[in-house]
Image (cartoon, rainbow, N blue to C red; front, side, top):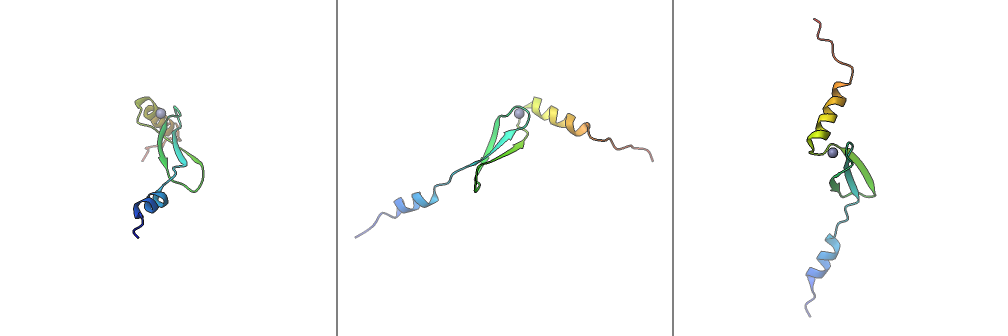
Length: 68
Ligand SMILES: [Zn+2]
């Protein structure tokens, strides 16, 4: 009278990764995250070109004047 516990566990543990993180420069999928719904997040991927662009965007912000 033994039941297969493994089958029940595998069903309940199944996860769906609905959230996706995209590179805002090249649109490549960086990572996926489990969420309660379909979500799209934006970040910067490992690509040197994309990281350079992200730095330029930060530099484009109002520069702090270093006068004392
Ligand atoms: Zn990228």
